Image (cartoon, rainbow, N blue to C red; front, side):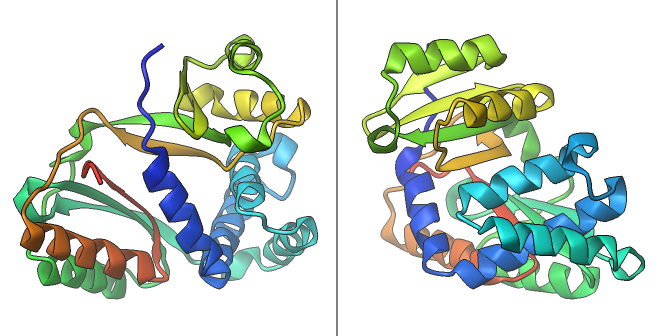
Length: 242
């Protein structure tokens, strides 16, 4: 099966998250609050909450922290006023960038995102200007060193659960699913005791773009760093081949 993984990018992203647990836990806490408000506190009957819990576990958030977040959100539903917003634009050399944010102040977030693009010599575009270059897929990453199954057994477990694609990389396995079946596949792997580095519905570039100009690389990294440092930003997707 074909491979789409950029595990080096994912691993780098995870390491940055490990160095800033406070930020990733804050992000997930907001997502829990919104999910509970929209669908209630029971993950068995709330797909979005189940997906956020999976993300929390993949980022090593303690179970008691997750439970406290759900209980707090359930008792504070009326005060949850976050909303999802998405921005699309271009970095240097036409690199496509999608920014997902969860905010209680759209004006503030829009200004910060626009500033991040501008400081990196890029620009915000109109909705849909780059999203057609990405596919929305469920993506699960498994570290080879943490997985007891061999590639064939893991692949069959994933495909039997409903996965669409399986790829073996140097350091990892990547499993891709339809967004609608992501939770079923993730749950099957969890029930099988398979540890996951990352488990989320994401935007995967159809093609990656290489950069050789050092100034363009520096400017793009500036934009990505500013976006990742913004507390309102939940996720950043791009097609730069790092």
